[in-house]
Image (cartoon, rainbow, N blue to C red; front, side, top):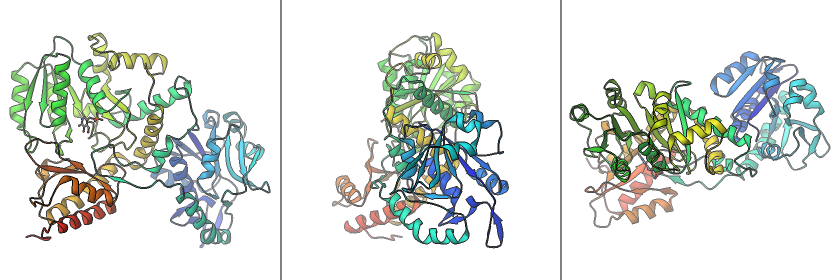
Amino acid sequence: MLRRALIHEAGPPLSFKNRIIPKGALPMGDMPLAERSARNLFAAGVEEIFIVAENGADWYSKLAARYPGLRLLPPGAAWLEECGDALVLLSDVLYETAALTLLLNEHRRDVQLASAAKEPSGICRLSGNKLAASLHEAISGAPLRPCDRLLWSRIQSPEQREEAENSLLPQIREADALRQVRREVLLNPGPATTSDSVKYAQVCADICPREQDFGEIMAWICGELSMMAGKPGRVETVLFGGSGTAADEAMISSCVPDEARLLILDNGAYGERLAKIASVYKLNFDIYKSSGAAPLDLAALKDKLTAGNFTHFALVYHETTTGLLNPAPELCRFCQEKGITTIVDAVSAFAAIPIDMDRDGFDFMASTSNKNIQGMAGVAFVFCRKEALEKTALYPMRNYYLNLWDQHAHFKKTGQTRFTPPVQSLYALRQAIIETRLEGIENRYARYAACWEILAGAVKKLGLSMLVPEEAQAKLITAILEPASPDYSFASLHDFARAGGFTIYPGKLSGADTFRIANIGDIRPEEMTAFADLLAGYMRSLGAAENRP
Ligand code: PLP
């Protein structure tokens, strides 16, 4: 697997519309050539892109500032020795994305794609040792692989640019569109909608997960996840094959010593599940019960925490049952002051709500690959503050597969998980992390919130009601009270929505008849608008009046 790429801006700049610009800055459709390449490379699973620019450093440094993972390097610098094998593209080449797939599947370490007439394309994969010796020679000396059907062209003048924009670019768009996967918009609370690049990340050469390169991929995943959960060096991420409940069970079963007293907040199905897990392991625990539809009584909960001599506290950050956001940072910081260890189920909060475990007072935190990180189901992860994790080394081992310390210690020692990891889900997670890094967690939350605003607006306009007061919601999932009409059934609404390309979810809270709409995953505001229109259509079919005062 190639994890790095290089974009090479070689030769003199061009004059374009009275400006002197590097060739990679030439506009092509909706973005410049080099930016198109960078996006293609990230979508093909490249974690890091180096730019070597013989001119146009200013333009490239502005581009690099907009893309985490893109770095402008001075030509000939020592980094070439560390680069390793990489995809290498000249900045002036326009191509269909299948070119990158071809190269990723190549057995040869040095190869350049070419036309049937052996005209080199400037699209290569090159070995680290050749790159380290000389970038120019590595490119010019790479054996050619002729591909007569591949769409590509070098763009070296404004005239060529115009011609390519009018004729080649539409063909490339069509060729790339042929690979698109049918879109289903999942408005259930995870597994969430994924990008095509995340789906395609699973389709790659077989690998034995005991190989060192796969271990390096898992280590990279852990490192990147840790950086999303705290400051560098502060958090350890421990991976398991499993769903979100596996991460919850790993935490509860591994982080609470025998002599401890655990308090669990139960204000929804997932808090209740934490308590169920604690009961299975016969831990010494108590439950603080609260409504799933209303904010917590913080003072009462804090009183219980202090009066009850609790040593550990577990809660769900975002109760996916109802969409209620628990004030986990406030509660966990309070616990930290009292010396109480905190265990947070952030399964549906992580990667949407910005988290810093030190700042927020979280000792342990669970999440999973198929929610806001926008990967596939199958990987559970537990984030641990380093000192908190160290303490668990001597705690009793209550189960085998899900033991946090054993999994962590084994991985540190061997670079492998103890048992077979879910290889394809991990590849998808790797791609999802690349895309999360590109979007940024704050921007992701802003996108989710924009979708939620559209939904909430539609709900109000249609005279429906939300179960949880707006100010207590995380804006990630909305529990909506079912319409009173005798013609309503969840099944009919579900089927109506599914026929329109949207999957929705039933309610989960006992005592309130709701259906739930999540707005997490790779979804766009315009899709939520389309869903709002569809919901209005369904309501009309029930005879409900729109625009009720
Ligand atoms: N915790 C929370 C807050 C959840 O939302 C979920 C699933 O939706 C889980 C735990 C359980 O995750 P899984 O169904 O992947 O086991």
